[in-house]
Amino acid sequence: ADLAERYVAASREAAAILALREACAADTHGHSHHLRLGALLRAQGSPAEAVDVLRHALQLRPGDGSTLYELAQSLEKLGRTDEAWSALQQAALARPEAAEPYLDLGRLTLAQLRKGVPSASPLQAIAALRCAIERAPQMAEAYGLLAQAQQLAAYAQGALESYQHARRL
Image 1 (cartoon, one colour):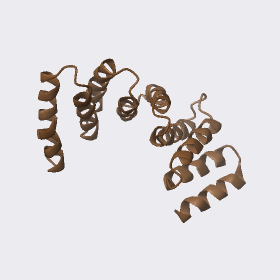
Image 2 (cartoon, helix red, strand yellow; image 1 turned 45 degrees about the vertical axis):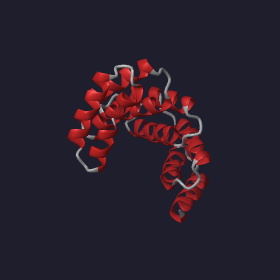
Image 3 (cartoon, helix red, strand yellow; image 1 turned 120 degrees about the vertical axis):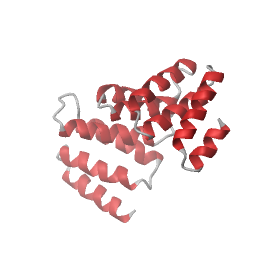
């Protein structure tokens, strides 16, 4: 696994994937190897394979927030937004201090709103994005997305304030 890290640092992702596959085969109960392999597979454009690897990692460490977050990213790349949304909710619960799951919940909810998904609500997006901002107040992207959600919720003053705050960051 350390060899895989050196390969990644040297921008040799294919070699890193091979090294991580070998580490997973040698240690079938090694959660961290599976998590890193899944993340790298997703980053290298193999989200379907990443989902399989990450689901195995979740069997090794059920409820792990980092694994759930990576799984959500892979599911979203596959267009499986309902599953991604569910995994992000679980990741947020497992890692309540992390801003990223909340940011992505807000972003994904906004994307669903734009597609006209009836179950999506601008208030859900606003709540998730406010949680992200509470955890990472300097995250400009969260303020920009919050402004969009507020605009969709017809909260014009809040949208203007969020856009202005995002521009200042």
